[in-house]
Amino acid sequence: MNFSFWPEEETQQCEVTYKGTTYTGYMTLCAAITRAMEEGIPITDPKYFSQMSVEELGHVLRSDNETPMPMLQERHQVLTEGGRVLQEHGGSFRSFISRAGNNARKMVELIVEKIPSYKDEATFEGKRISLYKRAQILVADFWGVMEARGEGDIINMDWLTMFADYRVPQALVFLGALRYTDTLMQVLNKGELLSSGDRREVEIRGCSIWSVELIKEHLFKLVRERDGQTCNINSAVIDFYLWPYAKKHHKEMAHIPIHHTRCIYY
Image 1 (cartoon, rainbow, N blue to C red):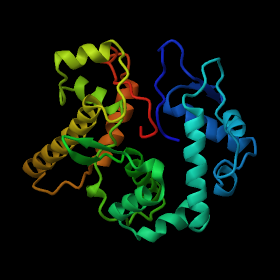
Image 2: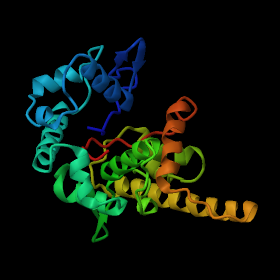
Image 3: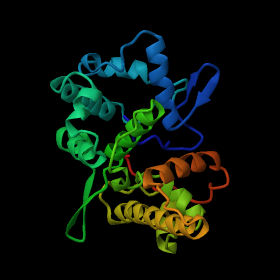
């Protein structure tokens, strides 16, 4: 359900308060899921969430105010769909993903093949473009959990790109790694809704991916020149830096608009 948290109006955001802290954006999902678990709702059990109703999910994701979390119907559809796939493959994400061994690339390919809502693709100048934001961040999060447990032997992590969403591109523009044309900036400042697959939307996401690849290559060069060593940083780690940076500095970045696309892919 990790997609599309931007509000229609900045002053009207979905909010979820958990243990005295009020969250917005993606963190509302985290707070809502944790709150549900404490309430005894088995929201992390595929047996339950593969069959839960829209009303039950609406209760789990309820907002503190009158602004609901966007796209409830779509979240319900992808959640139950994913739950059914997990049920068909051992009943847990661990059993499902084990079919890909410990290879990050094979994990992404397995997720995209088996769970349709992760098939984040577009056509650009006649070519099929694979962006796979949610599939890649799922594998990267799994890698992070395994690393924390001392089981981080997943290979091919350097195959992953950054996770092309609407927040990291904003940070890349703010930091000067990416530049929008005046025409594009005008469109974004107006808050124009870009459809998923729109050329401008695909360019923003694609150029963000390439920008992080260039940052990674430059980091390799800097570390080699400074320390005479090989740097093993990957694009996922750079993304893990940029996304919280964007959240932390959102006020300083307010003059740089995010692009608005309502879809299940990010």
